[in-house]
Image 1: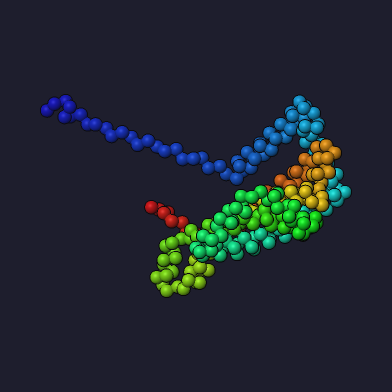
Image 2: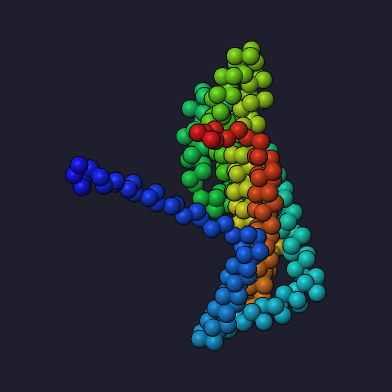
Length: 276
């Protein structure tokens, strides 16, 4: 018997796949705190290099924030802006979901109105501001319309896409059990599109904050946008950044709230391919 016949060939060992390291909430919070510290250090460095006009010191921004909150200026402006955001977002959510359900659930309507929706969505919202001023004036009503126009299309498009791409297996199963079209639509297609609808609402909420600032800058100046304009015109950059921080916190809070709702309400959705 030859040596070659006695030799046993060892099979190559399987290459172990490295699993991604999952960071806990404490580690994520620590990383976020590190980012905040890095931003503060960068602000100090830029202030030292370029001066107060380019970047105020974080301590000066903090002083202005305390002053604006203590004398009620920030609270009043925040209330005015939140009113515009809330009403504009509410109207855009109701109308966007209703129109999205209609367009997503009816192929004929979708084919007819899809070019018009895309045309309006691709048009900058600022292009409609002169027309809105002529129709609604310069005050709260007009600002609400600006926010509605800005947030409408993300909600509408996401809702329509969610309805149109509803789970076909669930729809066919409902038909097999004799469900009528209306029941299929409201009991299967709309609930299955809920994650997409909530995603559109989250995007619309973020855009509502931007639309509110644009409206308050271009129309009768009030709210947080009015404070931004006043501080920017006087080159009070510490005051300007104090208002920007409130706007960032407001937008983050709205987005986080809707993201939480998206996670909670979307858990039940059937995940295809799991275990396959």
